[in-house]
Image 1 (cartoon, helix red, strand yellow):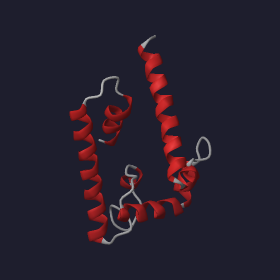
Image 2: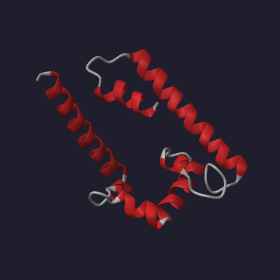
Image 3: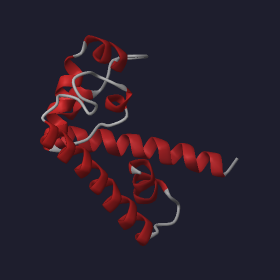
Image 4: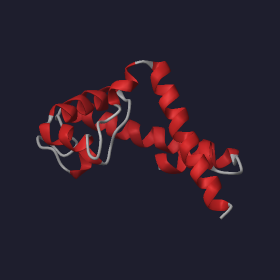
Length: 120
């Protein structure tokens, strides 16, 4: 859902306001469900006391999920996997300005690739 929201918000050649609003709202709702689940269960991971594929599929900024994310980063296997094929850029995101600049660069790159593909 977040991928769809990002596509319509940033990359789609035509801005469809309804799609942007719908997908962004649904993404926030789904992350809210995950956040509430972690708060209510008090468990460290989405499926209880162990790390599963559910952990890998969900990354975001909600408070309980942020604590979960930090637990994930502390797992050696996750940390090692984040640096394949090259070091991860997480450290760049420590400031809002650095995060915004990295996001702009990523979106510009994807937009350029998309536009190139549309014209070939």
